[in-house]
Image (cartoon, rainbow, N blue to C red; front, side, top):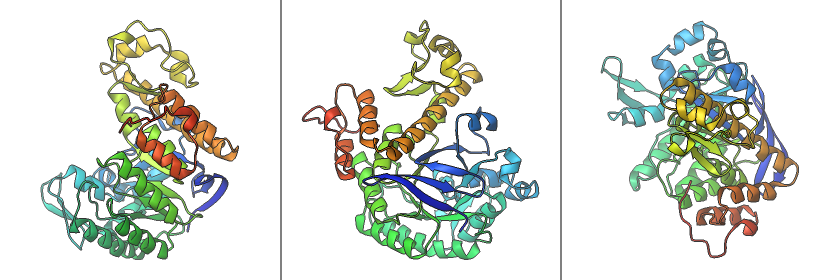
Length: 400
């Protein structure tokens, strides 16, 4: 095992921890930006350090296609290749095959897909996914799992969960660098509590360095989403990191952290930036709107980032979607917002003021007190009293 995980503070289920990885000592809860091709679009690694990124996620599928894992290995690993001194996490490549390649077919051997290069059928096995990730050299590597969208029901969900458990053993056996890289297993089982339970138990028996909750943020309703997270975090070991995959809305991160999750990743903050949207404590600010054309205020007057200190909404409105600089500045601000959110979660848990932090967060986002019902339900289970920021008899449904 190449990590240590030390819980520094708790509030009910929420925890703040120190996660020590080969390349960096991280503080949790933490958000990981996604750098598909070994880069966060439009930002330098210096800028990412400056805004406090701790772990960047790399997509194994994209890196294996270009520049190839062999070349990355030859050039000294992904850290050196992309000039990133802090921690890296790579996914298994399975999700991209299913989401990008309509012709992916999953069998017991692995994931069969058509090569985007020459159209020939190719097979990604659990063994090969681990070999590729061993060459790339990230601090955390993910097991190849059988991916099923949560919106699917029936025997396919059960098949995928049991296959995920069989494949974890193949991943563990193939993993040649356990002292440099941490292999995380992924809890599957759709929205079925019985299947999720079997999967958690099976993975925990294998005593892995960390565990991910997979198969969410694929279109399921928020009520199902938080219940799966609550169930899995309650059953996973206290002394290991818990990573909810594909979660990037600030509200979801606050809720999942209250329920005991530690790590998150998503393209949302940077992708939404490229569409001209900024993250602010009140929710979002759409810089494309004509109302921004003459607005001389910063994106967020309370934000200390380089963009908010130096540029107006009017200037960014002028650039957005027309000039690469617009999406670079917004990406910088949005990731700064996510890193500050992570730091605030960490410090509020350590300092014993987590419920106050949650209430302030919700008050800014829902000034009328119309906190969505699913958030109220989740917070009740997390043991956090948010009555002061909820309007009575709120029936507001599904918002981010």
